[in-house]
Length: 75
Image (cartoon, rainbow, N blue to C red; front, side):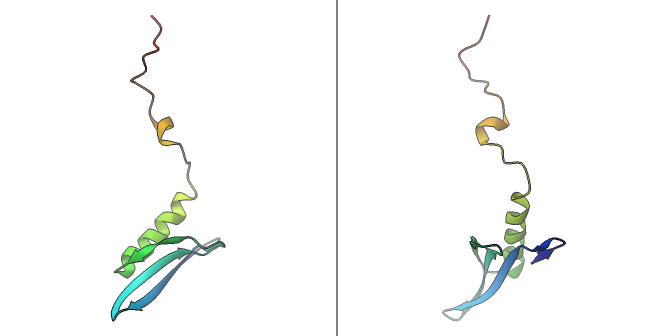
């Protein structure tokens, strides 16, 4: 898979035990396994989603929402 800036994902067709499937990995080294899928569409979607997540902000889950359960409140 490629974008304007270059390749970002690899989706390969596999045959295991007579069944077809797809393996999605990242293109850059070291390669990261995105997952195994039964359809080409799912494999491409997962590889593309992984690529998009590497370009956005990565807030920690605790920092997304304010702490509403805090017992230390000023009065």
